[in-house]
Image (tube, rainbow, N blue to C red):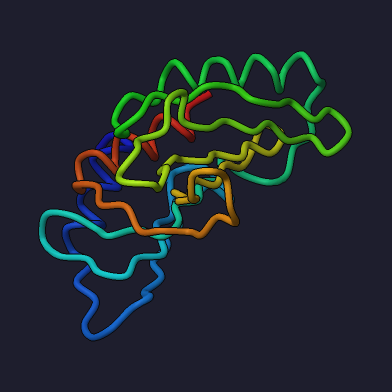
Amino acid sequence: MTRDEKILEALTAWQPQGDGPHSHSITLDAPGAAVGLTADRADVLSCELRELTATTGPSRPCTPAELTERAVTTASRVTGLLEPLKVYEVDATAGQALLRSATPTQRGDRLFYYELILTGHHAANLKRYSSGKPKTSRENVPYVLTHETIAKLADDLTRD
């Protein structure tokens, strides 16, 4: 069974009841590799996510060049979101790269965008935010993805 098939199977079986948020962790094939979800709701087809995390294993630092390469590769690989991702910053000191929606979605006077933080070779954290226009404080907002999209996204984020 491939990694995305395993994730899809685990998501289909996950049926939390009642008000969220609900958390779910899916252990992958490598030691320490997992996908974590925080969802307001989940059903047989989709999840209303607040956050998706992915780890490929134990913490592994990387050089600034390796982190930049990971960020660029990830931005081009992740294709299932409403907006494509763009590398905004690579912080070699912190060992993190910041990717955001290349062009945020505008609804009324609000902007909506994804933010993906990559840490070293081993971790990724995806959230969606909304902020006012002109820019005011931002808030974490839910985003709906089908199970198939989540499985592909998680596979994209955990692939070397």
